[in-house]
Image 1 (tube, helix red, strand yellow):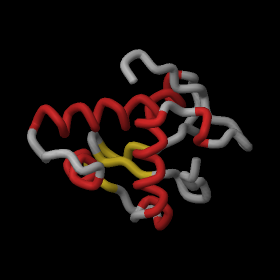
Image 2 (cartoon, helix red, strand yellow):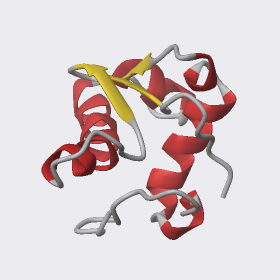
Image 3 (tube, one colour):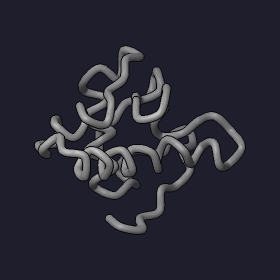
Length: 100
């Protein structure tokens, strides 16, 4: 959703508080490689969401995944909904799953 607010992650806060697009990305990463400390890049996420892996779609997914990853850094602490291991490469932090 354009302009969706991503609440700061804190212990006990469920992904259900996130907008549906963010929940889908969290679920993909948690059910896929994210729980094992591996990550998916924006192109892989776009394909897993059923989108064509064309630049416009990939950039849209990257932008959506970046918001829950970056909010922890903006608040001055490391914990966020997602981890961005390098630009465009996202995972769910170890010990945190998706599941709406």
